[in-house]
Length: 80
Image (cartoon, rainbow, N blue to C red; front, top):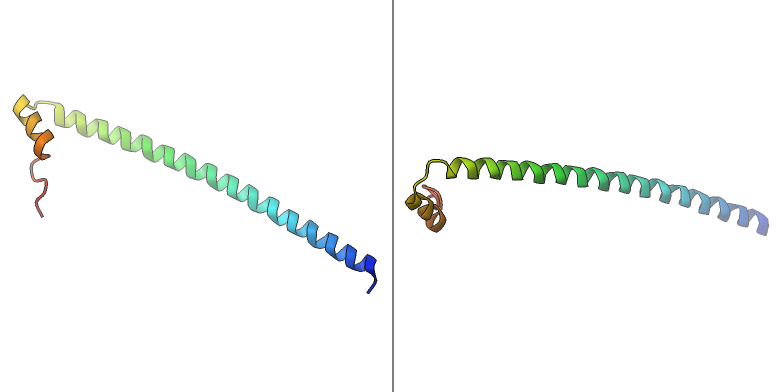
């Protein structure tokens, strides 16, 4: 085997590895973007749910009920 054959094999191997690296980087980038988007949607959904629950809880409560909610939690909290 001559040195030029070995050199050509090494160049070919480097080229293959570079292509694999580029493919993996693009996959990682798209996966990160998808994950970021999903997390953003989940956070927004959680915010909306909290607003709905807080809105439902605050409507029609007396000051005493508000105080109880702050100090002890909602009725049934802590029961097993």
